[in-house]
Amino acid sequence: MSIKIMLDAGHHGNYNRSPVLESYYESHAMWKLHLFLKEELESYGFTVLTTREDMEKDLPVLDRGMAAKGCDVFLSLHSNACDTESVDRVEIYIPSVGKEKDDRGLLLGKALAMAAASCMGVQTHAVKTKESKVYPNTEYYGVMRGACKVGVPLYFILEHSFHTNLRAAKWLSVEENLRKLAKEEALVFYRFFTICPKGDLTGDGKADDEDLALLKKAILQKEELTKEQKETADMNDDGLANGLDYLILKALLED
Ligand SMILES: [Zn+2]
Image 1 (cartoon, helix red, strand yellow):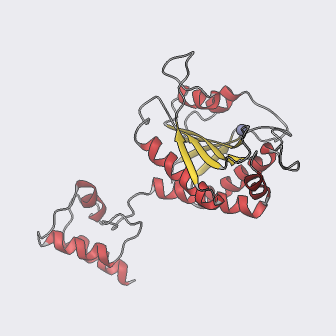
Image 2 (cartoon, protein in one colour; image 1 turned 120 degrees about the vertical axis):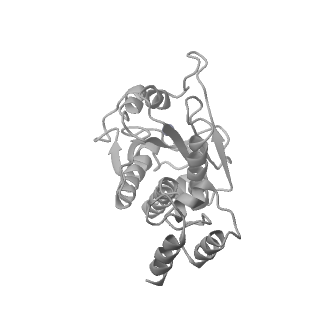
Image 3 (spheres, helix red, strand yellow; image 1 turned 45 degrees about the horizontal axis):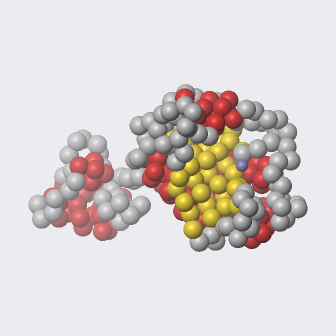
């Protein structure tokens, strides 16, 4: 896979201590999480870079975003904070400007937020955009502005709920949980970038007998396939979805 992902651990050193759980620092948890996520993404074949090699060293936010030049995705990992202890909600900031703003950015952003929320046992998630008021037509957050500036199409800030919430801070303090989170988030990327595995006409993530039956109907002209379905059904990439593809898919499923 030739997809390149830049991961950014939210903060350096001992930063953003939880006011309700003294042992929790956002910087520590997110550092661990970004290394786990790197591993998990690499296991799917993604190329993964990180904005910093050393947890103790800071790098200005704009530079971190701009370091993602040439990447397909920039993802900054955080846990949030607010004055209300009870707030326990996953939030993601998605591109608000540029060509991906209402399409793939939303799709991937939403999927990431949902996966993080479900893994963390958080009831709600929010997908947000924040445009800069000072510089129109660009992002409010420096890391996102940087990534946007160098042409990264998909860039996000993912807030893993609020470390001002005791439950969330406790959950994020368990290394095993961070590993689970990394696995779930990596799976979202994998699914997103391999949306249509060959033969998966129904789009449920796998090629199976249902797809074979649908292809048969299409060949017998009892069913009309969409353009995407036809491409997915074209097992031998000859530009057609026909009996030969049916035989290839059938043989593959019998394997
Ligand atoms: Zn943060």
